[in-house]
Amino acid sequence: MRIVIVGAGLVGTAIARELIKEKHDVVVIEQNSETARLVDNELDCLIINDDGSRPETLRTARIDTADWFISLTGSDSVNIVACGLVSAESSSTKTIARVETPFYTALSRAQRETFGIWYLVNPAMEAARQIVRTIAQGFAGAVYPLHEGALQLRTVPATELPGFPGHTLGELRQSTLRHFLVAAVVRGETIIVPKGDCRIERDDRLYVLGQPESLDALLGKVHGLDDAIRRVIILGATRVSERVIEYLDSSEAVSGARRGRAVRLFRKRPDITLIDNSSEACKRMAREYQKVTVVNADSSEPGVLESAGVDRSDLYVAATGSQSKNFISAQLAKVLGAKKVIALAENERLFALQHRLDLDAVICANDAVAAAVLEIVRKAHMRTIFSFYEDEVEIVELCVDSSSPVAGMPLRSLVLPAEVLIAFIIQGGSLIVPTGDTALAGGDEIGLVTRKKHIAALESIFGGPDER
Image (cartoon, rainbow, N blue to C red):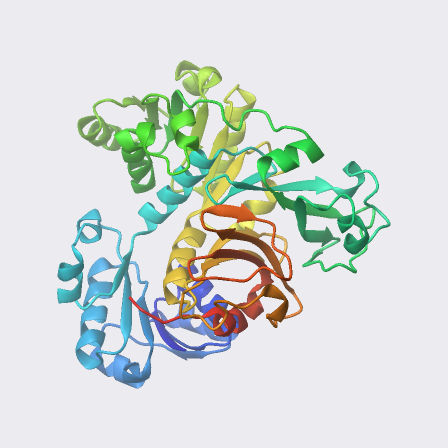
């Protein structure tokens, strides 16, 4: 596919990088000359240093030949105008606009089409969705819930699994590995997508995937995953915080989980306290969210978190605009007695600190936006459900379309790249352990562990119709 991206900020560069790895033809338009120079050195694609909302620039990018146009600048108006111009120039080019203002997010489909926009992506909403999804699924340090909590991914040193070091996964599969999967092996500075001949070494760290009850039997039960959320403290009067509050304050949080887990976590509306050091922001939040206790104070000052009841809180969410402040504050809250803490990060730079610190979850805002855009663009309708911070490896999930070339095909007949592992299949709403004889059907959800460079090949293998 040919994709034109306007805006080479953190999100635009991240999306361009992924699409280039997936072997797509990418063009990046960036108005700032210094930023354009930097990304030109980093990205192996055409960089145009110009204003992406000018018709002349769009023609230079040959927008009429593009499959997708993605406008990701920091200006809502620029993104909307650019998408409108592209829509007028080429009816076949699909458009995505990044917007910050909630007004635009609330536009109906017909209203978006009037602006020439196929899809809208709101960064605060995507980050909040990821936070809420994490809360609803249940989470703890070194435990990552997947697929609404029906699956868990846990990290564990190989030495904590008796009989694993020195044996291949093929050997272990005959006995121990019947009800779970070693999705990845971290060895030194690299990560391995393992096959049956992968021999486990003593210093390896394993990512183990399975149903919660199977992993409980193997590794022991993780306490606290299903504890009810009654008291919540949120740091930062940001748009992300607003979206999280709106979810927690809604009836959906109490009565609406698709798989029942959030019903257990939110037996009633939680008590929410918001802390921010801006008096104006606190006044606005107090007016808009009258059921929320708003505290105008600096969380780093002595006694502030204690006075807010952090030692009695079930959940502490640090969602300010500073990722370093979020990490420090979340760690402090954990030390002071918060049961679970979540820190919002801008990028993956600090992810390696999650397990060095005592943080239960870290949510990357830019990753959430990039994942939303990539899910839209990928023709096989893939979405990333987990990214391994150690290397360029992901767990992706896709729904098999009835017209897909693999529909009706047994797994043994699939020709997949060497570094791709089938992790799970959900068929007819039930999670099954696939074998070579398992036949894929339209509507099946399939999870794959893959290096990012193989995404384009997987799109070709699994791709169904590319529809809106």
